[in-house]
Image 1 (cartoon, one colour):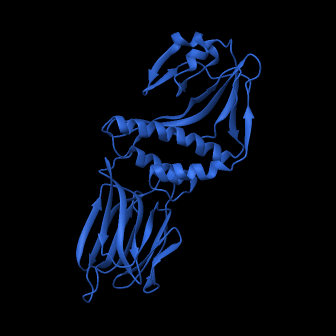
Image 2 (cartoon, helix red, strand yellow):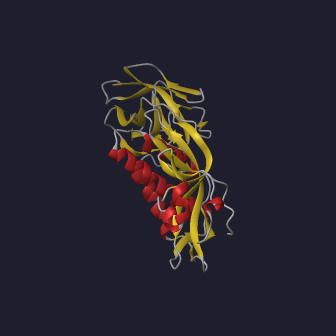
Length: 309
């Protein structure tokens, strides 16, 4: 898998940014007058309005056929578009003319382009040769932070911001994997899932990080310090995925919370938990002999955490 941005059409009109597809529709006659993306019209007001597809859950566009060409010696424009989603829903606008471009076996991350009184160019950002990752562990417990005795940390009051902040940690893990291996496309899949989860229009990892920074910079925070004789554990639920190339990655599915855990806890207090920090056994030495590797992470296959919050 790899991430590709494909431009189709001419250079007339004014550029509009690539956005993740939450809703999509068009205006069209013999050609495509406008792309209506996420409620915003990019192009002219001619033609008829098409139906609007609203992406459901993890639905995405997986096939497109786009016809483009010159019209009456004017610049190249988009004449016809056919698209299909991963749930088999379709949308067709315009009439066949010019050169046909087919994009298939993909996952569209976002659409952009150029437009004036018609749709001049369509830019398609997508994961090429896409195969969805398989869920190999669902709703698993993971520790993403350890606050030792005598230290403090800040947490967000907003549930949304807390989950966004946690997502940034997992994005960093995915980005590190892709920078040290030949894996490609997983960061795009992660960002697409994040866009759906948080209702964002981002299509790249850097855009997602910017959204996180924007939402967290002025968010209300509270300070946590472990009580005497305790260590704070930041805990979250995750789904674990395996990509077609074997890459293992995780995505948070709950708001993180902090559990205050006695420093003299026995191994039996920890359970079926991933240690994303790699430091759990340093704070709880009795766990060292219980550590195993699962899906590329330290893992403790014991009973559930029963420590007091």
